[in-house]
Length: 397
Image 1 (tube, rainbow, N blue to C red):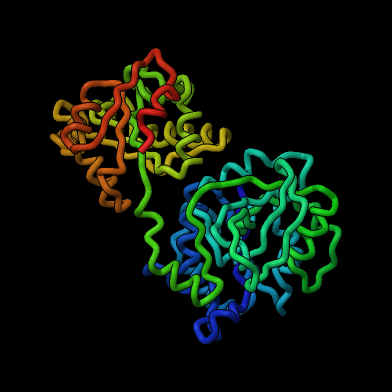
Image 2: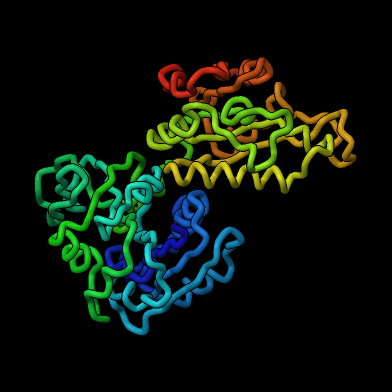
């Protein structure tokens, strides 16, 4: 699934003057437009095509798209001539939609593993939705499920007693053909299209853990402004060769990518538990002229693609291409990034705003353990003949 469609056309009337002449998805949250937060996740999960479906204050959406660095994906804006609702917006963009596409509400975000709903999207359903658990369902309406089959969307009732439960997180996988059952008019995706699909038992729900952010009201917008959801997470840092994949000496050829037992399962387990997952790897083969940075990046992209098929991902690869005995002049030097020095770990904590108390390092060599010790974080040595999942209980933070 390559295409991600984002609904950015709503008027945002509950935000009052804030969105009177301004689109709700561009309201600033933690110093940047909310839509920019969404697009950072779109990038992380590997989507290559993005459609923004705009209506209210659409010139601002166009201006944003023109100034946004979209080098990782194509970005196109589709404008409704008149308000068509969330369902009508999709029908209006029908010819631009791929047969299966990912769909996001433009005013909410779930900081969790989006790939889980793609992995479980199958021919027996037309819509798969992400479900997240909240302490109070009254503002959103509870989703009633039987196994993974969605049976009912209960109406929101702000006067009801506050009870916890699963709600629709505004993230979907959608089969384009379902839209053929509707005419181009003002429609709600949730109340019209999804209701139709639920009646036909063609909607599934995937429970995803993670922090849920909603900017639909002044109260929830204020709460989002006070929440550093990306900086309060736990993280596991992996060495690469010999830990996640077989070490062939200088490993860079895509055909040489062989995953260690349990590696993909452990990464997905950590993703589903809402941990960050990073790689910190010495790549002296670049300095020694064995391969290029481009070849290394191609190897990392192959790892990403394999993981995506499995419903997993690595948040970012960190690498050190330098070595004092190199043959490539630009890479021949000492570097604080080269393990057992701690430069890469320092970059991770500063770039992602993480506490050392929430970090664990896993590697197969003494230099990995020395790196963890030098940085004053926990380190666990991987036995190359073992299954990586055996380390899960130890690394749980």
